[in-house]
Image 1: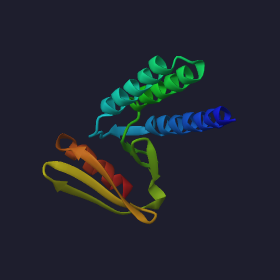
Image 2: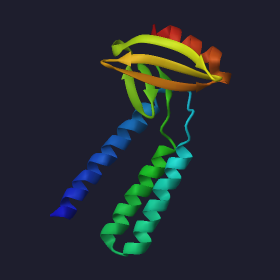
Image 3: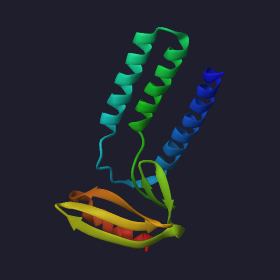
Length: 140
């Protein structure tokens, strides 16, 4: 029974990751500051540990799924899309974005905005300043 619940959970996780990848494909101007490589490496180490240590088909399947999610993180983007702002694959639709600000802090640009009832921040490299200013102007 518990294996069945884990398989259902796996299907949900695959759906969430597919949604993040779908939103990432909408990004017109990529602004990633973080490294998906570190996340992918962590997922890879955990999955290989599971597949080698436990030597059962269930753990092999779970390890392969974790590896797949880690590889998917390499393709999840942040940036500006026609529909709004994407942060790590999560789309924040432009109709709900309020109080949009562009700030500079320690040579890092920050796009800060209120989405529904909480504030979100997108960090951007200084070299992308002009492109970001154009994208922020489109969203206002």
